[in-house]
Image (cartoon, rainbow, N blue to C red; front, side, top):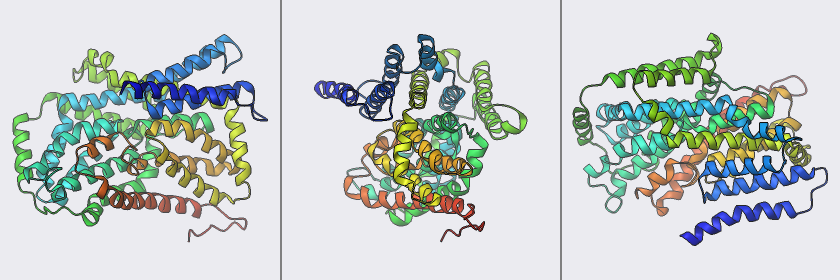
Length: 485
């Protein structure tokens, strides 16, 4: 294990050195070449993760700033290195992680999940919807789908199959496999449904703003993507029930177990009610912030202050939350690294190179190709964050070169809206997947068929509905709208 970790530490450094010593391509500055070498080393490090991801990003930024790879002066390098820490979206991510802590510490997240099992859990299909709805209700407030699905829902849902003697080694198909598949697929859909349901969504929005100047607000994200995500979300338990049906069709013991667990929790507490009220307040300000003149980040920080003042969480929780601080440093440094690619001119050069191969395509084909490739390239990544930082600015750069200005914003929404759905394609594609796969109910023998069906349905539904509706709004040369078929 120690030897393996040493190799993982050495590989990113080796990749960076190899790229750096290669001849600088024509049209690219030496500084941009060296910075890209460091950037690529950071991406490889994020994929292998031999050390904490935040430390990888911080090392890349510190190295680049120290050697003046970004910025003409020492002050300019310093300002660039710290730019991510002043980014409003990064602070929104930090505050949203505290909301997740509030749901966990107050017990409200657990109570919501148990209530849904009690109300819907009389049948296996109902249990599937209970698991999905629990994820859906919590998702706007929990930017970590790992904390949401694996940390809050998994401990409750994984107990249910065992009531029916469905274990990984004995009758997994009876109930456990079905619940696991629903949980994974549902969290992938909810991660794309809400801006604050997945931390890389927020990172992606920041990168879109830096790359194109477009600002995607919470309300715009939801109103645009919910048209397809809500139907997909509602269909997930039913489709899984049809494609990978549980052998156990009824589950009368589940509601009784949930009722017993709720009784042990006691009546709803003051902290839970406060958490519920403040969560709804944050949601209202995120949805209507543009109309009432309140920025999403400042709204989140205001609600975070109220969470502490009302003692739902303590100030000690805020300053000692390793997960939130780790993500804050990690994403702040990655935003700086991604912006550095543009600052040194690498994105312009690379986008121009790729654009040359696509210049003969019409705009509609370019949109479809970019969306499909952006999605499929996730097979190469074990981290949605690494995928976002590595590819989103480049794809946006290509789009800026080849597409009319009016098409950039819809394309950007298509790209960032696919980040959550990517989690369905492999057992390592998103945070909760290893937890649910690791439970043992889903094995390699049944994984490919079911995953492929769910993947194809989710992505085809997303791409067909959104890309084709988008295409239908683009006038052709004669001013007539195209028909998607």
